[in-house]
Length: 519
Image (cartoon, rainbow, N blue to C red; front, side, top):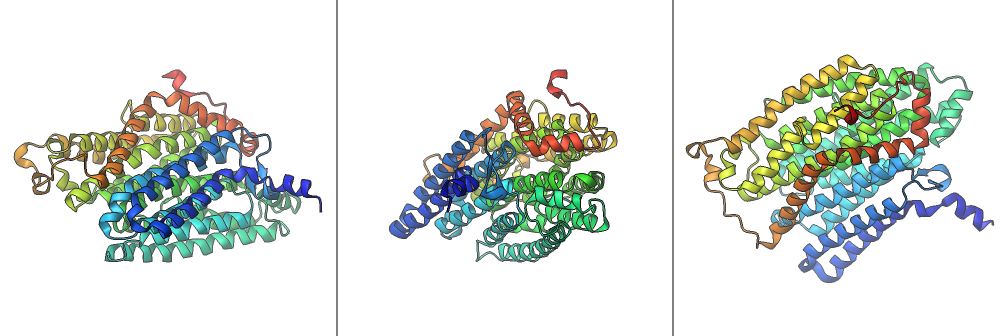
């Protein structure tokens, strides 16, 4: 046996970050087994340290000379590095949110973190998988862990209901996705590696056949579920309302980022001959997501349901970059997901802090909050204004890059629709900010009147407050540092071979320049 050749084909060093996550997962379980619940908070800090170590390992893999591993099953190119970093960082912040939340719910923190790390592992593998079996296993690892996390608070009927709905709809979407990839397997002559599937379809002269189009539709349906795109969004409002808040924070960022990474890799590699068809389908999904998400969010009275519909709308904005199909389009997607990580998690951290102190997430109960908790009001206000795209916050630059890329690619009416729906979103975001800040003392809600005193010396709240400060600072700085972040996103695109091939072969090939140079 030629061990040198075997080691070269495996190239196992590319999954060092995932290996660190696995070791961290085992360490969490062992520490809990040996020390018991008395070490629960230290388990959380151990998990965060492991995720940060995995992120550092990703940095050292940037621009690797040989990113392919496991005989083509996994690709650690710069595109996957960025998406895997987003998944790992979202999990780290989620654990900061979870420590007090899980303790107060009366459930075991170690098991919660172990399942969350398993979901993180699945999301990281999805972001770099380039072979059908690995894609499916990674996707199911992420999905099954997400179902378990959604129903983790077993004594809460809403959590149980959300988990059941998520499981049923998720199982259906998995079956649809699996049928689509099985069609690809047959049409390509039994290939499972993505580039081999593309070559097999091309050599069989079925690249634009009805079978490929049907496979494309099924694959897009599976991806649409994962990124919460309308009309595959039915699970989102109920799951966001019923699941533990840290869980939906992770699903809204980490799981969504993995879904977009899978979409880019599958569509650009396997379906270049039907690019017009999948762009048309995603245009329809983007239109539905932006309109439905923003319009329905106007009528919500629950903060978590409002953020659920906001998440659907945000997916519509990100799809503009995917539809553009240019360097600027893909880079703007990555940049937006990077800043979305901080501003969305900042908002959810504030929601958790408020609900832990008051026991409610109703928007009306936030009335007059500024007078009792200025820091929480500042954090939630900046997060919501950034999600709405108010300058000079990070969300403004994210939308500018997306709309600029779409405009250069000739997607004029789609960009105009994005601008109009962004204005709609500003209304329901500012409504919450106004309620917290502008209300007179006599209009303060009863919940806020009885708001408990703010104390920093309560150990369980410290991780949450630290998470709030970190995400608040990151949200503020991301707007100031938009050029370096966009450069990072752009480099991840220009250093990724599959995206460069897609840009060359795409029917829409408009030269893209950096929009900030014209600002």
